Length: 434
Picture 1 (cartoon, helix red, strand yellow):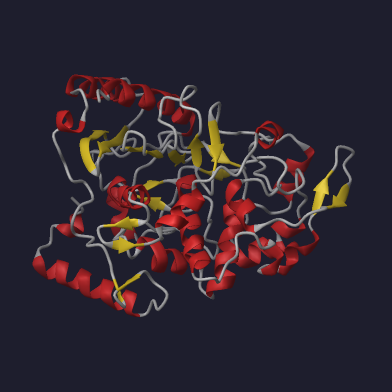
Picture 2: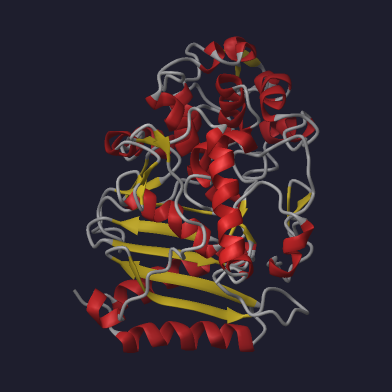
C-alpha cells in the first residue's frame, strides 16, 4: 500500500480533487460519455487471488521465493520485487530483501525503480493517442514533424556518409528499424564513436530540440526500414510528441497515460519527499556511455528521455500492463481503442530485418511498436502473442494472451537482466498448471 494511501479519507478526497483538476485542463485526455475519467490511485492494482484458483502450483511458486531469498542472503542482490498473475488477478506478489545497499526498508510494491527502457511502451502509447486523433501519422516521415530529419545520411563502411534513399517513418522510431542507434551497444564501432562525440547523451535540451539539433545530424547505421537496431528511436518520438502536442513530453505522458491510469508514482523525475522509497543498485560504477546507472531520481533536466527516463513502482506499472492486456482499458478508463492496441502488436520486422541488425530479442521473436512479440512459442516459453519489454537495470514485464498471464519484475542490477529473464520464465511457466 502506498504511504500516501494510508492517510485516510481526507487525503483520498484531495487526491480525487487534484486528479479532477488535472484532467479538467486536459481537453484531449481519455474521455467517456463526455467526461474525463481517472482510475482511482488509492485502490491498488493488486487484486489478490488464491494462486491455485488461477492455475498455479503454490509449491512451485514457493520455489521462486526460496531461490530469490537465497540470492539476497548471499549478497548477490540487495532486493527485488515480483508480481505474477492471471485473469487480471495477482497470485504471487513478493518483495525480497531491501531497497538498496545499506538500506533497511523492505522491497515492496511501492518501491520506486528506474525502469529505463520500460519507458518506451508508455511513450509509444502516448503517441498512439495522438494517432487516434489524427494528429500523428505512423506512416508519415519524421521530417513532417521535425524538419531537420529531411536530410538524414547513412554511414558507409569506408567512413563516408551518403543521403538516405528513404525517409525515416514515425512507426520506425517505435520498431527500431529507423537506422538510429545507441552507441553503447557496440561502443567501439566508428559510427558509435561519432554518436557518442555528437552529444547523444546530452540532457540540457528538451526532447524536440535535442532530436533536431543533435540526432538529426548524426549518421544512420542502415537505410530506414532495412535492419533492426536498438536505438534512440523512442527518444526522438518524444520530440515528435512535443511537436504535435505543444507540451513537454512529461506533460503529454501524464495527461494521456499515467494520469488517467492513476500511476501517481510514475514520472520522469521524483520529488525528494519520496526518497525513502527509491531503489538503488549495489553497483555504483555501472553506467551507459559514461552516465551512471546509480540514479538520482530527483534530478530535473530539460530533457525527458522517451526511451528510458521514467521511474515507477510495480503497483503503478501493473496498471499499465493490465490496460494493454484489456485491449486499451483499465477499470473503465480507456487509454486506447482495441484496434489501436492491435496495431501496436503487429510484427514490424522480417527475417531479413532481424538478421541485419543487432541486439534483437531472440529466436521465435518479432517486434511491434515499442514491444517485443512472441511469434513462435516452440522457441520461447511464453505463448504466441506475448508482448513485453524490459529495462537495462533489470526490470521487466510481459503479458501472455494465450495463457492470460502477466508478470512484473523489478530490480536494479544491469549485470543480472539476462539471468533473471531466463529464470523468471522458467519459474513462472513451471508453476503454471492449466
